[in-house]
Each structure stands twice: as C-alpha cells, then as structure tokens.
Length: 347
Picture 1 (cartoon, one colour):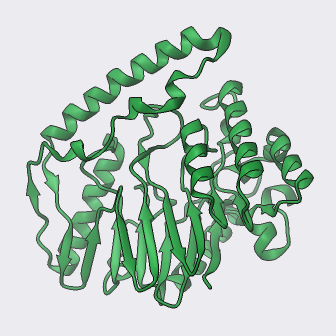
Picture 2: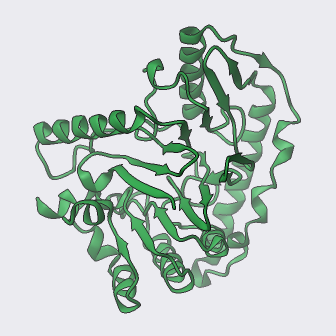
C-alpha cells in the first residue's frame, strides 16, 4: 500500500504543491519548493513570512529520507534553486528538461540550477548541440482542444491559436540553437530529464507525461509535466501547473488514467479578469466536473493556485457542489490534512 503526505500547499498559506509518496521501495518528493504569497493576498507580511518559513520547514523535514526528487518545472514554488545539500545522494533527481519545451525565463533558471549542482558536486556540465532532440515529442497542434468550436468566440480563438502556433515555431528554432545541457551521473548526483519516459524502482513505477502547457494552449508561461506513480494496484496522478486543467485533452488524460488519488492544481482565480477570462474558467469547471463524474477516485485534492483569494470557492462552486452530489472525496490540502479550511477562508 502506498502513502501520500500532503507536505505543503497554497491552502497552508504559502505557494507550493509539494507531496511525498511512500511505498515499500522508495520515498518520492514531488516539487519541493515554496514561495511567499503575492501582495494582494489578504494577510500581513509578518504572517506571510511565518507561513513561508513553516512551509520550508515541512519540506526540509520531508526531504530528509527522500530517495527521489521530482521537479516538474523551474518556478520557485516548485524547487529550491540554491541549496545543493538537498540534491546529493539521492537515487534520482528527475527534473524538467532545460533544452526544449521551455521558455527563456525557465531556461535561465535551469542553467543557474544545473551550474550550481555542477560546481557543488564537481560534475562536468556537458554542452553539445543536439538539434534532433525535439523530434521525440508529438507536435502540440495535435491537441483535440484546438479544434473545439467555441461559438461566437471561435473566430477570435482561431486567431489566437494561429498566433500561438507561430510563437511555438519560433521557440523550436531557438531550442535548435541552444547548447544542450546534459544530464548528470557522477559524484552523488543522478539527474535525469524524464519527460515521456517510465522508470521502475522495485514494484514502484513512475511514469512521466510528455511536456504539457502551463495553462492554455501555447501558454507563454512555459511547459510542465505530470506524474503517475503506481504501486500495489494503486495509482497517484499529480499535476503541478496545468491550471485547472483548462485544456480538454488534459482532462481526457486524467480520465483515461483512472487514478485512485488525484493531486490537481486549479485555475488562477486570483487573476480572474486579467490572465484568466470567463471562457477559460468555464472550460476548467467543465473539465473538472467531467473528472469527478468519470473517475472512480478515492481522493481528489484540488488546491494549488486556487486558495490565493477569498472568492475561489464561489468562482468554482459548481465543481465543489458536483463532488458533494456524487459523494466524492474532494478537498483542499489543508481541509484533508488538518480538518480546517484554507487559510484564506479563515482571514
């Protein structure tokens, strides 16, 4: 039997989506990072700092005996960028490929991270040009969601998708020109780029998806990957930053996986009216309701991004109501772990 520890989440008061999965074979930490809440979060700076430090403490304690560290992308609420002591001596560090399916900001952070590890552990940071690398992935314009009819919004959507595709092709041309940052296998560091691959540790199987958009189709924020962990006829599905999911294909992916435990990030409702519009919020609501209706899960945690503003429950009420109607176990992390609502709802 596997065990899941909800180490640190937004509902605890600091930005994070960190879990620990424990089997008889390995202890796996996913996205061990934490960041302070944004200025508009309705709490004092002192409280925000306290919750940040509490989250950091919880994550460090959970890292003590971790065999495997997984980093889904290079945002600071998903990894610690400057502490080499965290990463040495693990069975594996699975981290987002810094060479392809990445934007400039995360590429820069990845180079800093890999350079830090290289210098700290005396591992040569390999740099070669590998232009064929991107061919291992399917083109993103095969997404079913790009063909969905959005009624009176459809012409505008087609225009945005065309602009997104042009942007994506420019990104590909950049990737071909970059020096390839190699994996590391020496001096206590076993760092692997795992997208679209499967790894086995005893009876524990870890499957990584291909790169997924961080939000809507052709999101400029970049790419992430999702993780499936299987052990003893149980399956955990973990998503970090697919924002809902907004994209219908990603909801299909979760439904097809039929996991027992779902750790799902939500939409950025605190950015509603800015980076999140009504059309895409409605897509999220429809997609998550489909997951609730079609997956026979034991537990669904819907947290990261959501509890960053007081109206998050109101804006997503149809989802919570559908889970109640079907008697499904769906909670934020703080509700499930501590029996208390997200901190933002107590303020």
